[in-house]
Structure formats: C-alpha cells, structure tokens
Image (cartoon, rainbow, N blue to C red; front, side):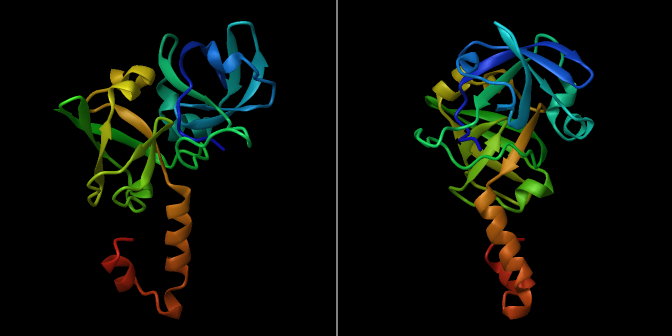
Length: 208
C-alpha cells in the first residue's frame, strides 16, 4: 500500500532482463530485501540491495502494460516505499497496480500553478469523478473536469520540482491507477443491476 507522495526521484542504472537497478538515496534508508517500492507507480519487490542502488525484478506483463517497458539507463523515475502503519497518510490509497497507460494532452500555465490535461484509457476513465483521486506515475493527484476519456489536474510547483512530471510534455505516456474506492463502488453497483441499479441509473450518475 502506498500514498502517492513521492519520496525521491531515482535514476535507472541498469536494465537486464527482469532486473531493473535503480540509483537512489532516500528510499535506501531502511529498505529490506522483499520490501515493496513503487517505481513510477508500479509496485515492485526489492530483490537486491547495494550501497547506492536497489534491484527489482519486473515481469514481462508489467513491462508490457506500463511505461517501465521503455525505461533505459539514465531515465528518471518516481520512488515511494510502502507506507508504514503509524505514518501520516498524505495522499490516498494507492495499490501500485497500474490500470493502464495514458498520455499528456496539454499543459497550461495558471499563475503559479499549471493545469495539465491527460488522456485516459477506459480502465481509468470510467472511475474518474470531480475532486476524486487518481495516480499518475505514482503521484496522488486530484481530478478536475473529467470527461469521457480525459481529465485535468492542477499541479503545484513543488510537485513539478520533486517528481518526474516536470520532465513530461504533450504526447508523453504516463502510468495511471484509478482510485480503488471508486472501483469497488462501481463494480458493486454494476453487479447489483438486477436489484434496481440499472445501466440507465449508472449512466445518469456518471458511472458509465
């Protein structure tokens, strides 16, 4: 379980088959073999530890269904260790299970903020609601103006500085994870259609 609050930006040192070695500093503090680390929003297991890097093993499915498949040495990635039970919960419930790859559509300056618009795959778009949560490359963000297959988020300067989002631009792919609470509610209501929750009801309330 993660919160979507990025701890540091790591750098890919080496990619060899399933092994992905990442240079880091902050997350190495108390990291142990077998621990979970979110790399650009994908939950991975630590397979080896060194003084300045850690190694995770990535399955072919994860490589193919996330942006991790395009990583090369020198690429920057967002890192977050699994949350502690007694720690502050600064973002939202993030599982590290990427639902799909979306892309940046455009970025617009709004004073000190920037308004980013993303194109979302169907496995993410159906769960988006105004002021709801979404995870982009492991970052917990608040949804603004969701439409059928796109949505906006307002980004503060600190987020751009402390994550890899500042290096992204229109057309760039990003990992997306929909809010787990929204997914459970959606599937519960859809599964109870015979008890009065019909497809028309779901459509009227923005669930489809």
